[in-house]
Length: 130
Image (cartoon, rainbow, N blue to C red; front, side, top):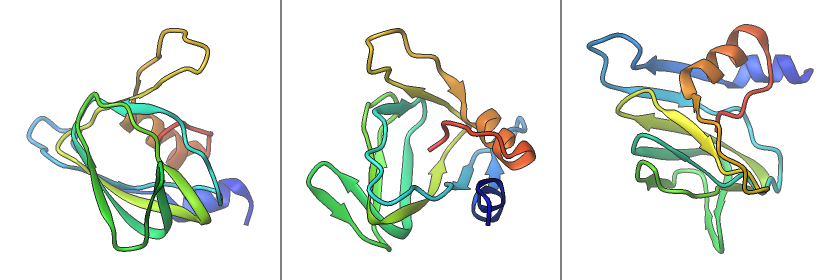
């Protein structure tokens, strides 16, 4: 499959907290390539991420399929993938902003997670959503 076809096959958005009474966000990430170092970032909502394929790498910790981890809102972290890649299901109480920490020290540019994922689903455009 081409990259756009792979994105359409893997990325799933089940609940996006977009309506005024919605209180859950859940999506499956696009697959991380093997040994992807990840990017330092944070989200503006608490989250729980569940490993559904591959291995999540947090520093020296390796989290296999079936593992879960939590990240507090506004807490910078970085998740990478092991040699078998990585795919996650992400749970949040609300839509949020993804804020990547630029390596050059410039100001971060928050991006609404739902906008990023919709672009991927609708257009196959590259997005920073993780």
